[in-house]
Length: 143
Image 1 (cartoon, helix red, strand yellow):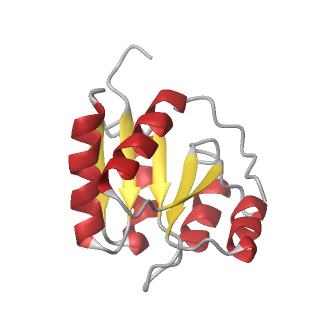
Image 2 (cartoon, helix red, strand yellow; image 1 turned 30 degrees about the vertical axis):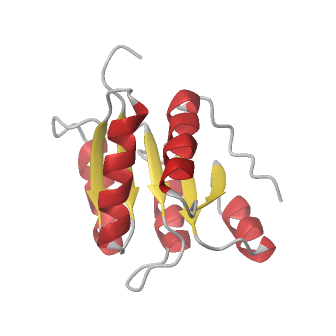
């Protein structure tokens, strides 16, 4: 990748958005971070990026599953059903460890599914692994 990787994180929890930003800074790899708290605006934002507005679409989208306005599955459906965004890498990052949620995310086209870590260092380690894997996702979520 010749340019700085772009990561978008969609979560209604503002504290989680800030925590991920701090953790990404600790990862040590330069990334451009785009936090979004409004899940309803995500698809419009991605389509604008895909239409060449000067801001590249993200290389990786971290997407919370449970959000009040528009669910993570609805956002994922929007991403997967539009020709300009269907191939973006999407990792569901949620507090849910339910097998039903994992299965639903897999069926809707998530590249991966990770449970939000409970410690800051675990979050840094998880994000480091995700950044290292950017561009290698194959839309296979382990049940």
